[in-house]
Length: 88
Image (cartoon, rainbow, N blue to C red; front, side, top):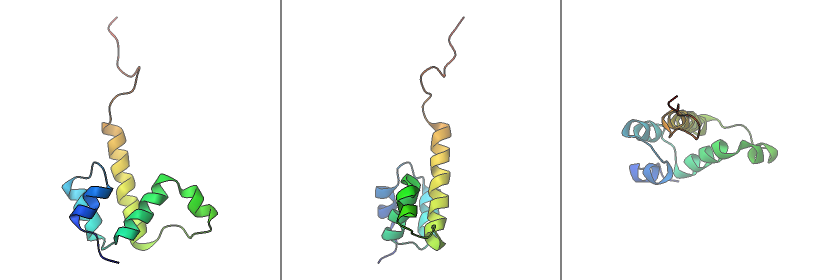
């Protein structure tokens, strides 16, 4: 199990800026831990049903960083249909 490199993070995480990449690498996590964190974010129900303990340690740190990135992306995302005001 090797620690994450910048290339690993760029390949795995969309919309990651340099600060986020540095935070992720700074956790000292491995590629496997990043994959596990992404699995928790994608859908935690199968992991809970598999009786896996909630994310802890580096995986928990990664979940926090990635969920913050997702929240930022939701705020900056394109406007949905009907969200623009129409002239009267």
